[in-house]
Image (cartoon, rainbow, N blue to C red; front, side, top):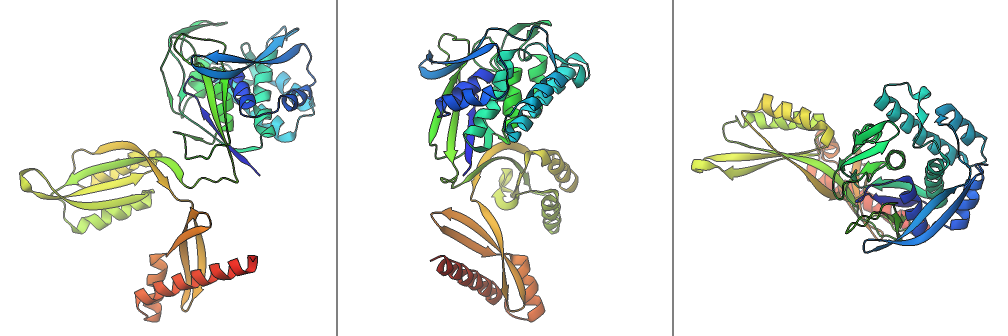
Length: 401
């Protein structure tokens, strides 16, 4: 049975912070050590210790180097080490994906092909273990889904093998393209290339903490211990046996007031917005300035469709401006269940309420089509579809008993 892991990167993220957080959340230490031994690398010792970061207790995992790699590693050398290991295949594949991301980011930052990148910061034993250990830890915890908060990248500047650079450095900047990041806290680097690459590879969604029933919470400490700042990564772990009642997502709400649009055009505008992928479109009567009657048009749309929605609103309506707001919405898990009734098949939209309860509604267009073909009242067709779904559900329950 799988698990859901959420990374809370309020103080950034690094490879050792991920390892510490996973161990703090219940990853068996012996399993991690034995698993990493399958890399067949020598010259290092893995150590864990309890530490304080600000007011928080956390686990600090250190890779103590006895004999490291003396020269920077190329991507082909990294691939060879991982593929020669006896690690599970999913761990090999995910680990290679992390290094591919790192190579692409370093190549983009320094204008060289990814295959020619020499890993300086991530090419030594400790960061190598951080990458593989983070992937292996999630595998050992049976994490099948991972999500993450926006990543705090820190502030100030850092000294690297390429000289002093602003925070975030070029590699983190490249890795963070397309995901939410922000700057807060002490003037230090809080997010490292290794940490960001791991989270980008493991996490399928970025946003606020979703509704979860956590079975464990872990805190992994970073190296720095700034005054009045808890430099830790927090993770939440949930069993799939405790499913989310709601699904949380971020979505754009776009609004505009209209008082001089021909009412016949509203249907055309709504149809175009839905064709673009709008989740919902609503028209609400309002009283505007000088007591003029008007209409408030509200559109909910995925963030990536924002520009397309704006284009429709500016082209098809007289509006000169719109209001945009990114909001959080919670929706019930849902599925489509077809049922057969006299005259055809109706798709039922079924929402899961939890604890074995659900609620269902027939798809209007299916019922309308059957009503037109058969000459039966639309209301009767919809009632028949709902009754057919209830009967099918009861039959299934009796079969399980």
